[in-house]
Image (cartoon, rainbow, N blue to C red; front, side, top):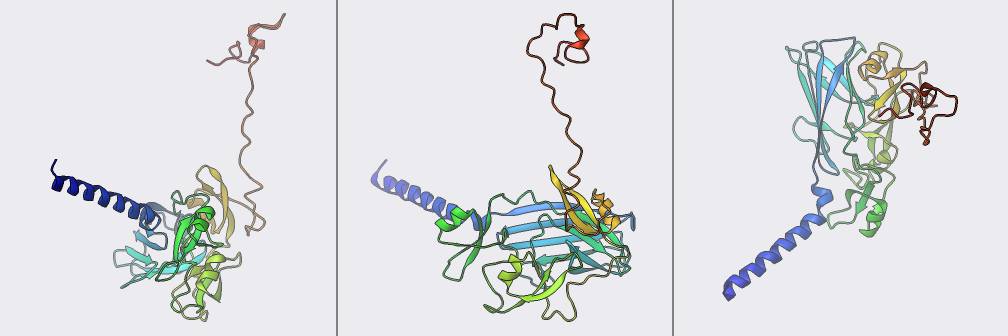
Length: 320
């Protein structure tokens, strides 16, 4: 290999190392998450169909798309997330419709002011009947990570980090475990309040908060300029809501306040409670596991005992 080839090889290696370093430093910003969820029809409209797609380009840049079909034509439906109204779906003459929410809305987008992962989404008609319901997958949320505000020339950037990693990067640990809404910035003007819908058993409460404070309270930032009229209020449910124990993968059931129809569609267990405080699902953890019987290590039957007396059915204390 001559000198020019040697030099070219060294530059190629150096470039590759530099690119790898940049890529490693920006992993938290560049990671992309995609998930899809089906919405189940309720007894109020067994023909209804719905699908949800969530895309997270960066920790604080998300897009949620909800598509519905076979609903009443030319009608309006509320989209609720954990009981908070987050948008309106308008159907066409064919009964189909779509809503798209983004962290940074453009065109006909509505504001995505919450993290939909793990949220119960409900589509409610003008009569207060819930026609579709489903829980958005939260498999992509990493345990032990929090929203970390890392200094940057253009302002603090929100990234999902462990507390130790956040401190090592010179970041500020927040009380939020997600960057949606972004707890590191107050927009559109620093320190200016936004309209925040805070979940409550009696219905979402509308308050003027900074975006960081809204995130800390587990609230949803909505695209409104005032709490009058209340942008958090959805069409009142046709039935009294109940506390529903909703399955959550292999974890204990989580309590959600829903209509009885939505509870059934979610595959949940209805309780007699009307509130999740105190949590009625904690009192019903599910069936008690069958205790494991440890076989006798000595396979020699006890004197005077028959084989069936030693180790249960089949004898021998070993099912094979």
